[in-house]
Image 1: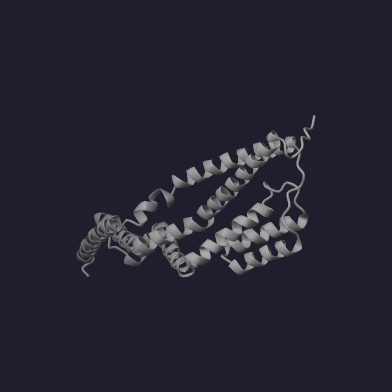
Image 2 (image 1 turned 90 degrees about the horizontal axis):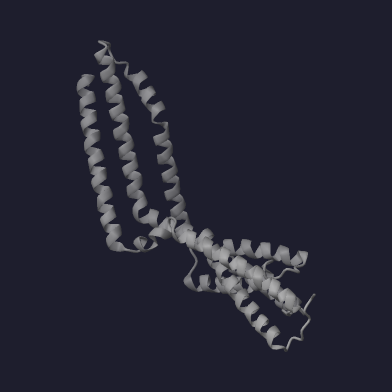
Length: 267
């Protein structure tokens, strides 16, 4: 049986208060999760690559060259062991074929580094970011389907535009949508029965628990799992030195293998 208690009863007032609390919590969590997935993850990854990526790319290139020369050296030695004269052109082609995966890794890492530079070059100011989030929260409360189960087709389309504008940091577009909503009709809460409020509360509690779980999982994954380290200059400096030492080791190996190849081929 549907419970149609008057709006001023204590039960109805408690449910309305609880529903508004959950609506606010849902909007905050939804915004937080969206930021982590679509903005913060890219920014943190880009900062990590900016501070260490160029060295990691150089290390990968040196390690790849060292592996290439070692493979070439071993192939030449195998031919010599058969009392044959090495065909260097054939050996080079064979080595290049076997090294394709390494070259692909270098290309992918170089592309990621370029993308990181692009991301960091298009960051908006803290003031604009704060305004963007504030308007996005307001629009989510007005247009998110989990908070507005009786949405019109226009409202669903507007929410798609809202998410797209937020993803692209289009503050002016969000402001335009908010102004349109304010001018078209003032936000008003429809008459909702106690049973309907209870169902909305149950639905929001489930979604809130789901969002909290997703946020916690993100915190345990890269780059959020090393967020503090990304801003720890002492750690970054130490890590840079470690990579530079690894680069030096690879450079020594390259020189060693090249020298051996030169002796083996009388170059």
